Length: 191
Image (cartoon, rainbow, N blue to C red; front, side, top):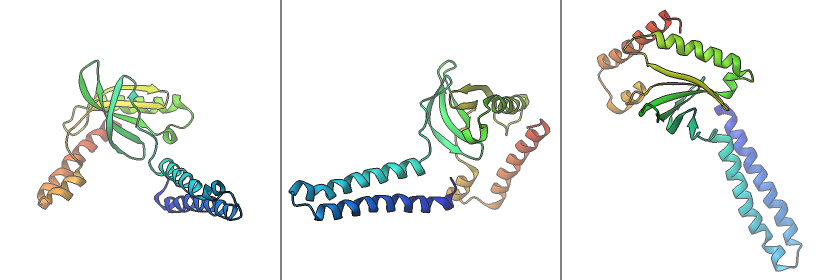
């Protein structure tokens, strides 16, 4: 969902809740029974709950999985056009990893094609031995799609580091050059 469509979706949720409350209020004003007159207050509470539920589903994204393959998910690291990356624990090798799960929209309905694409990416990355490229540990499928388990690098993003630390320009340049070297190595390997 694009950011530009979110306000209109929120407006639609608000309008639906308000319309429900307004129709209940007009019906209650005609009622003589005290319970029927109290109905709008109950309906208002229900409308607020419904609105919160709708907004949660519209704007919070899918719930975080508990497991991806054998990996126990411990938190969300970030997301992008291809999918979501989670911090996870590998109980078999007793180590923390990053697990990239491909978006259902990216994978499409043909999980065989998506898996083949992700396996190609994982194989190409696994061939790399570069200090600025993550090591790939595993690739697999789940009911929800395909994933790559890879090295977990502790720290913060380059953007967050710049925002928090305000380093001098030559240190920022050093970070971008290192990232560029990793990207060049990945391109040379066909990723």
